[in-house]
Structure formats: C-alpha cells, structure tokens
Length: 296
Length: 296
Image (cartoon, rainbow over all chains, first blue to last red; front, side, top):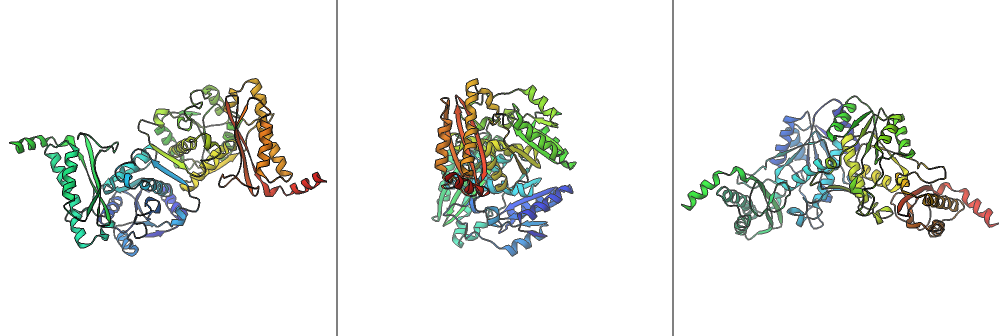
C-alpha cells in the first residue's frame, strides 16, 4: 500500500493508472475509520482495479464553533485497516497544499444546501463540494463511494456531478450501524457512557417513523412530533432538526408520496449526531391493510 | 470538420481522442468569429493534435438588462472560418442540455470577481466560471486558449484551474486589434459609423497611459484622470470604469510597481466595450531617463 502526500504525485500516480486502463475507485474520508468507511473500501475493492482512499479533515467544511481541531484521528490504525481491506493508495494531502494562501474558488450547489444540515451549518456543504471537486480533479476516479449516513452530502455531490457534467459514477452504500442500531460515526467516540445509551434514541425514532408510515400515516407533522417526543425522553438530547423531505428537491413535503428522506440531527450532550432513512412511500402499499387492521 | 451538438457525443469523441493519446486543444467561444477568435484557433492548430471549439452564448453570464437575446451570430460564416483554420470539431451545446430544469451548481472565484467588470456585472464571472468548468468537464482538454481582451475573465479562470487542481494548461493570446487600434469584439458590430470612430478613444487612452508610465508617471490616479478626459472627448462615451490593478489580486494599486493591468470598460452609445493592457512597470527602467530629459 502506497502513502502519498503530494498533490502532484497523486496526480501522476492516477494518470499512470488511467493510461494502463485501470478502473479507479475512490473513497474520500476524514479518517478515523469505522465499519462504514471499511464497507465503502471493501465495495470499491470488489468493483475497481485500483482503490484510492483520501484522509483529509477538511477545514472549510467546519464552522467556527465546530470540532475541526478536536476531530478524532488514529493514523496508524487507519493505515492498518486500509491495508487489510486492500487499499492501494492512501492520499493524505496537506492543508497548506489544498488551501494555499489566496485560495478563493468555491463550488456551491444552491437550492439543496439551504435546509436540513445546511441551516445550522451554513457554509458546510460549500466546503464539502469544493474539497470533493478538488479531490475528483486530482484523482479523476471512475467510481466514487459515499455512505448514505451523510444523506444530504450525497444528494448535493450527486447534483454537482450531474450539473457540472462530470464523468464519475457515484455509489452510495447503506448506513453501517452498531448492534443496537446507532449509526456508525467517527464522532461517536465523543459520547460518554450515558450519552452513548441515549444516542440510540435517534435510530429508534427513525424506526418508529418507518413503522408509522408502513401503518399508513401520511402526515409528516404527526410523524415528526412523535419522533421529537421519543428523542426528548433523554435529558441529554437537543434536537437540531427532524425533517421529512422529497429526495429530489430536499424540500419538506406536506404529505407523504413517492420517495422521501427522513433526516435528523441532534446534539447528545455536546456531540452533534445525524441519522436518516430513505423510504419509498409507494412501496408501502400493505400499509393500508395494516392501518385497517389496527382500526378494527 | 465535425459538428457535435449532444453533450454525450462530445464526451465520447473527446474520450476516444484521449485514448489515442491525442493532445486536445480547446477554444471556448460565443461565436461570431473575428480575428481574435481565429488567432486562438490557429495557435491551437499549431500546438495540438485535435482542435475543438465550442460556440455557446452562455445565458448565465449575461445580466437581465444585457444583450443576451441580441448577441450577434452567423453560424454559417463561423463554420466556414473554423473549417479554413483547421478546426476538427465545433461543439454547439444546446441551452436546455447545458442548463436543464433544476440546474443549481455554480463555481465562483471569490475575491477576483468583485471589482472591474464584476462591479457592474455582478453575476457575470460566476456564469463564466460555471460554463467553462462544464465545458472543461465535457471535453477535458489538455490546453485551453483564451484572449487577453477579456483580461479579468482570464485571471479568474486561471485562478479556478489552479485552486481546483485542474490539469489544463491555459494559453493566453494577445488582443487582436483593428488597423486603427480598436480591440476586436463581436460587439463592435453594434456600433454606428460615428460610434465606431469614437470607440478608438479606448485604445488611445491605454496607449497614452503606457506612454505616461514609460515616462515615469507612477501615480495611478493621475493616469486614470488623463485617460478619463481623453475618452470623454467623445459625447457618445460613458465610462463604466478605468482601473489600474495588480495582476495577482486584481486590487487597485496606490502606486505603480511590478506588473499591472490597466483595464477599462465604457459604453459607446449603447454598446459596452472593454479593453486593457498589461504592463511590467519594472521593465520601464528607461522611463526615468525619459522623465529626466523631459524636465530638462
């Protein structure tokens, strides 16, 4: 496994691989790997000739009061895990090379970035799309792998790739979860023991929402209220948002039809966690049967 | 010479050329060719294996009160000229394919786009960088050719390419001028006979500025005042701006050192024209001699 830190060396390596007609799979990360990352890497390993993963804690996607400086890292462990999963190259660009003095070009997907996480993190997605564009230009992968855990990020990057005519196939992998359902996240390490227990309320709330929808509930407000109440059973929880949005526009829906994203963000103690579920409401036809039997 | 209108066909053609190790030279234009465009194409012809030129009047770089709808065009003439100059492909993308419903991703070079033309055309450069990014992603050229006539555009696109780590060599060609010095522009066709005469004041003002600098003048305000007075000798002229800026930051300079861009925009009648000169002040050492001899 190669470790590359220089942007130009990374470009050269990727260029040579392209010349040799190798299919390049790319997994951009901020490191501190968990099963979610490894799932992306393993899938890339199966589908590509060359697997490149980048580890870069991207300063421009963090707000001034966010956890950029304390973002967890364990380089040695990441490298061992990457090697075990068959990564060919870890790309660790340096902050000063990615954002030299005078850096001033930003890519922004307008429209999809104003709500959900974009509301409380106003420049977050601009930071994400900008760094992903840079990494895409450096590596020029054939396939890029992202986790559904960061659902809005996935929709935003997909939109960028489509709008800017980029030749990159996006593969989205399902959310990796702990045994008790908590969505895996590098930030889970911030949680105290009690908070760790409370954090499971997030996935429980999503599970409940799915059940309500399966049982015929089509009113997003009612669903969100039930979710909110469930999460607030924990005294350490503070909800940032719970939204049910259309997966195309990421705009809130009045009534549930077609495909929706149920997304939430909440602080458990000082740690901001996100989780989500994508549901095709049309496919829950049986729901009405269920509802009828409940009413009987 | 091929004519391609479909984005996917253009991508496929360029991909095949890349596979065959052809060096792709690209000249993005809005059509209505003059010697400036043809100069870019001829240089591309000499330096590249494949010459692609795009003709696309890009709606998102025009303001609401600007000349998008009446922008001059002469497809047949452009095609003949392109053929004569050895173009391999004219790419005419369709507006609805470039900007389908819901298009919402923009590339913006902050900092360099707030002054000069950016002041009176606030969303112009965002439109330029976005369309150029799209064209670059579709064609993936090795070399892209631009004219110094649109100096701020050139600096902005160069900055985008650098900041986003794009593998494209930018070649900038000098301003093509009519015999009397007027910078060639597709918009010159809008000028009446009298306006056409008055329009030469723009290049005369630049010429005068150069002479003043060569003679030791280092105060930009004095130079700009003299230029302003010269241009306003014409009653049909209305100045948008005259600025002397540093070529790195595009910020106005207090005193002339190093390399400066002298840029101006003015309406002659209803037609907005731009012109500029890039000058290395250090290289005008003789200036002091000249100044001394004048004072004697």
